[in-house]
Image (tube, rainbow, N blue to C red; front, side):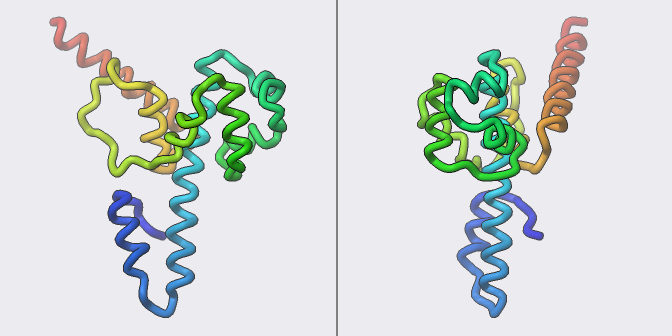
Length: 157
C-alpha cells in the first residue's frame, strides 16, 4: 500500500512507474487517490448539509438525487457523477465551484492552526485526507477544541 506523504510524493511515484508491474502500481496509486478525494468530498457535503440544518431527505427533495446516492456519497462509498455534484451544490445553495474545489487535495495540512480562526469544514476535509471516517473526524475536532480550551485556560492563569 502506498503511504500518502504529499501530492508531490504521489505524483512522483505515479510518474516514475516504469517496471513490469506498471499497471498494478498505477492502479494502486489511483485507487488510493480516489479514496482520498471521495473521503474529502463526503466530509464536505455532509458538513455543508448539517451546517445548513438540512436532512438527507430534504437534500434529496431539493436536488432530485436519490437518498441512496446521497447516503453513499456521505459515507464515501462511491464517487458521484458530475451532474450529481452540480445538483447537490444547487440544493445546498453553494456555488458548484465550491463543490469542485472540495475535490482538491492539499499538498499538506497546516501544523500552525488557530482553531477558532480556521474553517471547521476545511479542517474536517484536511483530516479526512488521512483516511479517517466521519466519526473519527468529529472526535479529532472535539479533541482539538478541548486542547484549545485547555491552553486558553492556562493562558488566563
